[in-house]
Length: 145
Image 1: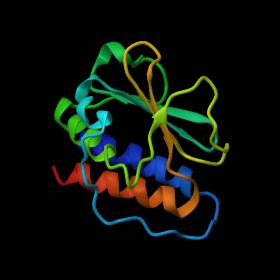
Image 2: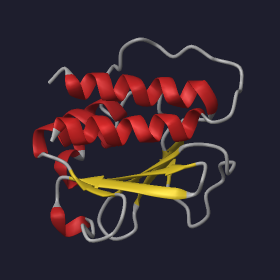
Image 3: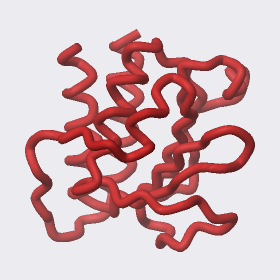
């Protein structure tokens, strides 16, 4: 399963690095905080919109995703909990309440954290190398488990 996540995140990294924007360094480690994202664990459904307007969806709860749809991934519970804790780092991820229309540019990689129904949070990790670095670091944190 970790290999599947690794391949999935590599695809996202490549999608987010397509443009050649100037590189902005990101801190080397994620620092979990008490942000509500960090407490969502396996109940969260995470959607990542990449610049080609494709959504990749993952969750530890098979009832929250449609596995027969492309780009939907069932993640083991412990890996999802680790991912969610890393996503609570508010110095890297600037979470806002989800809106019907994203305020972020089309070229940004956008994270959508779905709760029950359509409630949730969203943030942009930008585009280019910066977004790729963030996704790469999330991959490495999951592989360390």
